[in-house]
Length: 411
Image (cartoon, helix red, strand yellow):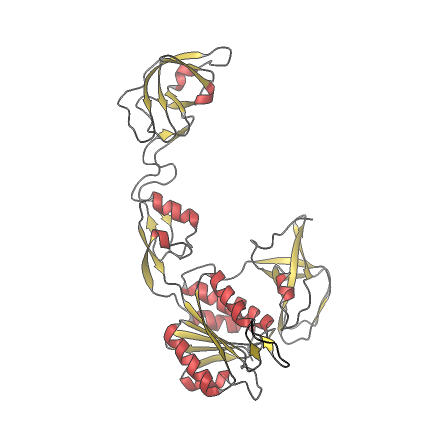
């Protein structure tokens, strides 16, 4: 049995980025850039108006106010997309719309709400500063600038930025296909009768959702009975179609725990089996050519932890991400936590902020088969291996789960 830190290091060292593919920009959302993006132009490409109003010389508005308006002669009108050939000189102004190029001679724009048109003249009720309401060429992005680095996740804002740069296609890392194989004679589907001795197959749905959430492509290969031949057949199929294979159940030491044996007989190399952690002690990790297999436990709480700690960062690394681990913070415990020494414990907690300090409380029952306490948690507290008791008021590390779902509200 090996420690958690060693086990995770083995996994991450064996996993590499996947191959690069080119996708159209409209398909690039949630992929990871496989190239640095440099700009071939300035953004904006020219000086332009930030407001609807009048382009003028700021010097001509000196002393302008509601009680003392300055009159300027209107020499032209310029909507966005048009370039006026007229030059703004002393005592003149050009009517301009947001985004239209700044005309020659102008050095400021007075917003329309501070003006009043009268025939071919405009009254200005506000004194301007030089450069006011003007967006300068290149103030967002300069030509030749490194705009986005390799390893950046492409969100909607990056899509918009790439579109502004004229990037119709991008090089990205391929998303891994992750196969799910659920083992166990006791499992039944959601719409099947729940007869004595049977339980619902929740692991397939849990893993499917976790894989989708992290950005990979799930492939559910169904439930396989506890028969070594059928397990081998299913794993071979998975290795043909997927980059990562996840099995659940059958990796402990019982008479029907056949997954580890089946995977080894196929020719996969086992890197480790059993980790000094709770839950998910019976965890196996294998390599097969350029592919990876995780023999996850059968209890859904242990499946969640094993995915979070090992599978999720592996997927993110394969997709080219650099930030592959959950953010960690230090928190003060609101209660005692007892455990048996010898294994790192992953405790489900709810974290709240009070002042400048974070506090954590257990979110419910901590059993390996329990899911409800995960649904009420926003963090996973790391209770050290050698401890048997961590007292209220002590500080521990907590891995933060999705803050989109659970905000750390200050009370």
